[in-house]
Length: 264
Image 1 (cartoon, rainbow, N blue to C red):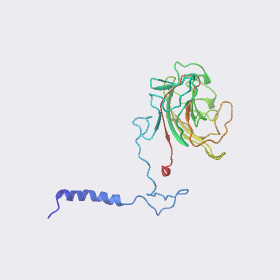
Image 2: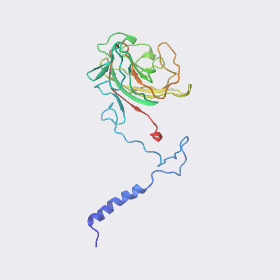
Image 3: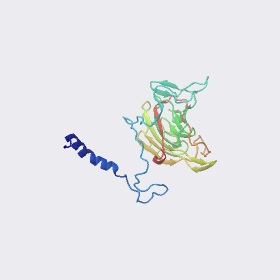
Image 4: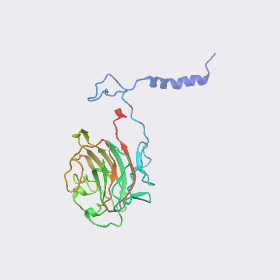
């Protein structure tokens, strides 16, 4: 009996795929990559996880932890009465004078990608540090400054996108007050063994898509009129937004914990 035509076609078109699937990935006869157990081009090395990127620039990818979705502050701790809480207005989290820090309920780290969008109050009011002041804190103690620096000068290590009190941004990429600005921050937290610092923290910051901090080493916790020092803390910590008395608005806040592909 002659084989059915459909069977012949199936064998013809699937056999190359079967042969390809059987072919091993990469090599194991190449040198080892220093500091790893993997050979150069090692096909047995873990494959990167597949995720779905955001549809539009700034949208959260599928593996992101969304801290603020424009609807509620469920991912943040609530202030105890009678202290006021931050407000949610028109899809934004708004700092309320006297509310203090808005602190995430979860702890994250040690290495983090954070996306956040913010807008300074309009019309602009005040000068220097008194104009649209807030801040984004990693582990609650390392601050990336938020400030209205559109045609508003202040001390360089305190302007928008500075590592507060330590490193000015490479350039001033500020938009006008009332316009939303973006921070995309890669923060590598410090490592400690007991009370001893083994690796300092580093920060890379893009302000409105412009690199303004390029893998800059922090000298310790940031502070006002002080030189930062490191003090041992856990490898995970909260994200905090600062109330500095100005009604700065925040939206589209999400993060990803960054882990090497070999440890995922």
